Amino acid sequence: MAKEKFSQLPIAPTLTSMDYFIGIRDNNDGTFSNYLFTYAQIAALAASGANAIITVAESSPSLTDSFFADHTISLIISNGQTYVASINFTQSGDTITGIDIQFYENQILQARV
Image (tube, rainbow, N blue to C red; front, side, top):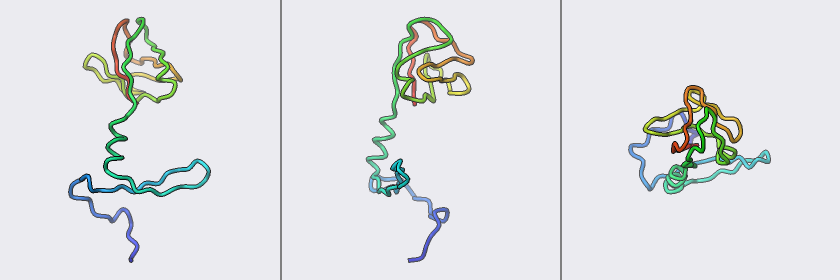
């Protein structure tokens, strides 16, 4: 069988539940493992993206929550607005600080990884 470059592979016509995905996992010990992932595994991973619903306790330009300590937040959604990390807010450990946003008492927001 001739070697084929990944860059020369054809684009699949339509993604179906019969498709498989080849993945390489870093074992964090200097070795790697090759895996064949199913469509269902990829879909489950995408659907399980970590997020949290948070009610703001007091008005402030910063918000501290334990969820932030274990997750790097990419988006905050509240009141029909979406705020993007590094553009609208920064994160340091368990605290989010608004660049051009403010958090208000009893405001409900969704933080997404």
